[in-house]
Length: 99
Image: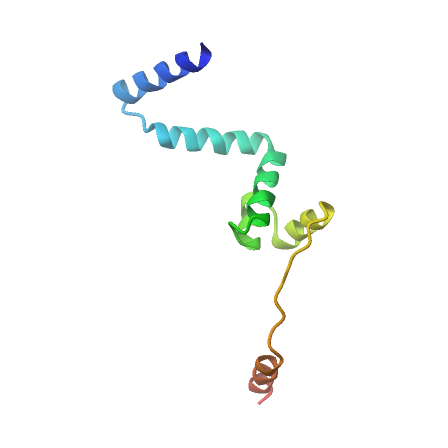
């Protein structure tokens, strides 16, 4: 019953006040996450684990720095997989810097 009333109110506001319902929902979700930072962090961790977002984007969503987000991942036992750089490429870059 409550969902029906909320839907009706949203429809009236949309028509009478020309309110953008999608923007309102996004703002409400943003507010909810700000009031519940653990959910925001959990969402960022989940998106990162599924490969949907990068480490830096996950940290941004969680509202922490990249090193802090790395600590969050470690505290949850989540290992980050990184690719080693090619030795020849590394040697070439070092020579370029030193020359």
